[in-house]
Length: 150
Image 1 (cartoon, rainbow, N blue to C red):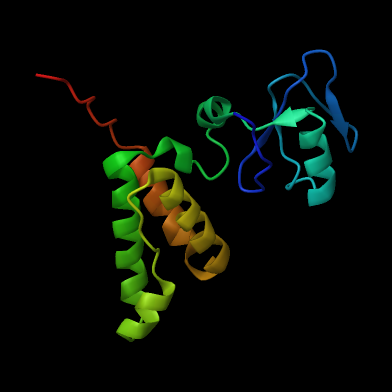
Image 2: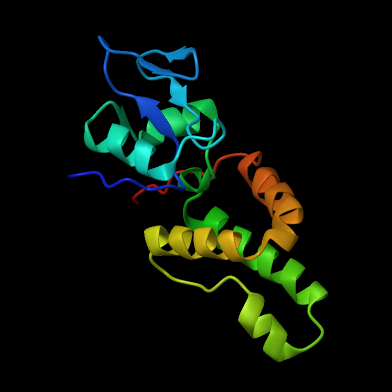
């Protein structure tokens, strides 16, 4: 499966032999490359990605607990994040119409739901502090038990 550059996902150094050097800092194999935090232009980060020097790695993202961490949420935990976020939004809205415009839209497809949450995050800077508290509290909960067949 071919990866596509996603500005919302963290980048990691792919090459074992060629570290990435930016602004005097050296980033070795599989280390997080915080291009956005360091002020790198999106086009430059895209070039590094397209030339295979950096890549997205969901396992490293979870391990390092960086990025938006939405890939760590699955099933009920993802639904719970949407429910709690929308409850928080509803408290701040004065009309139902305002709530309908500002709420996180829902989807039964987990990847699509993550995309809807990311879009919501980009449009609603006013709510991010409370959103991150909700997300982090859900992430710190015990993992859901695996379904077993009977």
